[in-house]
Image (cartoon, rainbow, N blue to C red):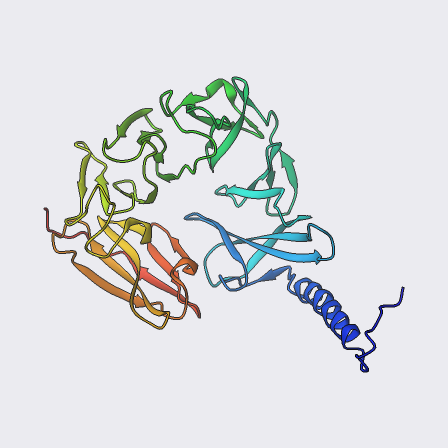
Length: 368
């Protein structure tokens, strides 16, 4: 079929536009395909960091392979990396629509990926790219299918996928290539969490920090737990933003709980619990890590015509005057695009051009 050209269009302007669009479409596909490398050194500008542990980093690349369909088909590539700045190994690829049908849920200490085919199955992918299904999954908790909340080297955390009711959260240990349902145990009470609401889960050693109807701290080693709730806060407990096994930072303001024998909860001075406003200009949502009771925060300041200075700052959670220290300048990238890896030995942050290693600061001696 010949594309009609308007009579007043002597140079075929419409056809020219159509050709340019086609070139753009196929050019995009070609450029995406050219990015597929078996091994490369990833950074936040070339891939998405999906999982970070003390042992491994898992990166994802999405390349458009057929942009002409109603739902563009893409190739998803997953790379395994030991440390930032090193070469990452391509271990798994699959093709699907732009809405991911498979996603990485965790990585074991030996480098094995744990993948989830949404709502249908879990499977392992070892470092040689060999897939092994997790037998017995999906599983049912009562009348509901189990929803995976987190994957660890020793098991998975699940809840019932019921969007209408609060349901318990369970831990299920691994048994070879399956889940040991006989050893499943509850880590929350019956109120637990509700499907459809974001549930943050942080783990440090044997301690889990989980936000649901309340803040839960659970010890996997002895199966003991503590709950925290605040009557003046919403029914759904505020989001957790950082946890190091000793301190959890949560909420829209600077709440903190020191996890210890007395479970001492505190809030930064100047915080208005009714409005959620933080008068000191720092909110928990900007916190990316906490260590030695010092919060590491991405801060914007000195905004001029839409351009803001972005910095990584360290805040002493015990200080009454919001004592802080500027660590690195991150201007040039948006706060929401700051990538980081928090490990036991250090915090590593992407500046937009390179990775910057930040040693953890020692604990402050002040106690307020």
